Length: 79
Image 1 (cartoon, rainbow, N blue to C red):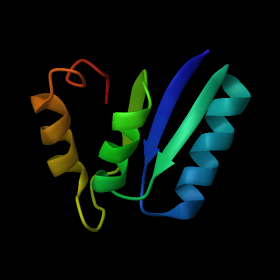
Image 2 (cartoon, one colour; image 1 turned 180 degrees about the vertical axis):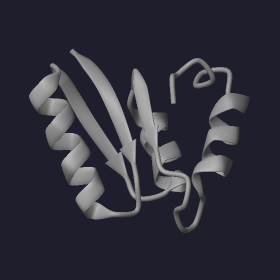
Image 3 (tube, one colour; image 1 turned 90 degrees about the vertical axis):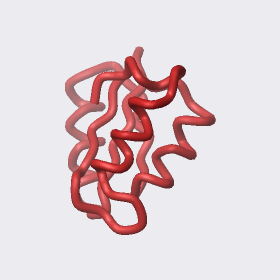
Image 4 (cartoon, helix red, strand yellow; image 1 turned 45 degrees about the vertical axis):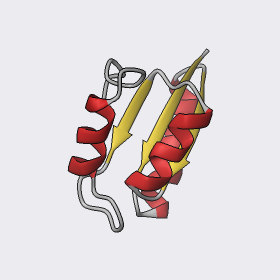
């Protein structure tokens, strides 16, 4: 089993991606509605891959990816 983080400000996208991933793979899906929430999830959970929206409020995908790549603990997670 692996862990996935889906980050998107559209609830229907999170629901769709979560269902799709759970139906096709043996995985646990975490979700966040913006980059700030995503970074909070990443502090508490080990994830194997991140699906990241670009346009989001509070902290967009580009800022989030930049922060992830600057972190020694997170920089190798595929996004």
